[in-house]
Length: 156
Image 1 (cartoon, rainbow, N blue to C red):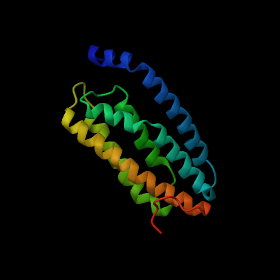
Image 2: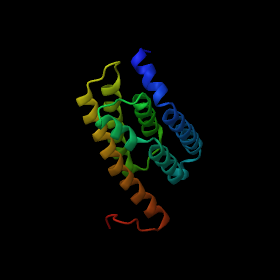
Image 3: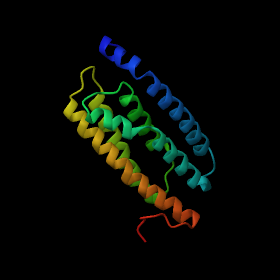
């Protein structure tokens, strides 16, 4: 690890610890849900959504847009790509989940360097952040339908 990345890692240690804890809990939830029977699709979906929500994509994107690459950005994006690819999504969410996994893969690629191209990282991070909001809305709409609850701003 370069001295620049080490200095960033030390400065972002509290953020790293919080994100690591959230990811650990979220991944445990997803693993538990994914090992359940196929009729537990809503639990799988909710576990994955909770993991994505706890990942801190907003904060990572805000930091990258300000011109700083957070030391956890690449690993968080990689972990989210794994969650998206391993979750047993209901049929109507499979294509959006694959698209979101692709956005995470692009973000990982843009950050995979000791000196990432900040413009590419900003574009990839912004796309992943916006994509997360779109995907989250789709997932909450799906879960709302499963629960018989109309989600605010959800299409009829």
